[in-house]
Image 1: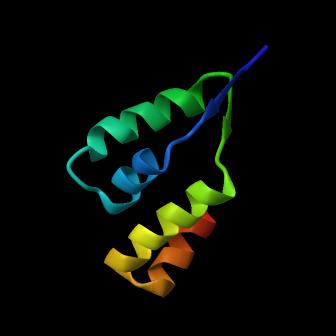
Image 2 (image 1 turned 90 degrees about the vertical axis):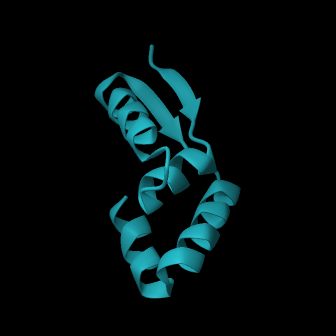
Length: 69
């Protein structure tokens, strides 16, 4: 049975904005995707992530990133 894991907004923000912890978040996401885990995010996590990404990259880029994620 696969474990359920809730992804924190900070992991997504670091990854999407390629900030100081980008490599750590990238390795973590790769590990979680390659293993039999069920990954979850909440509407609040989507909201927080989109707020910070939009603040840094603008609305159009944020929509593209989140749709493709």
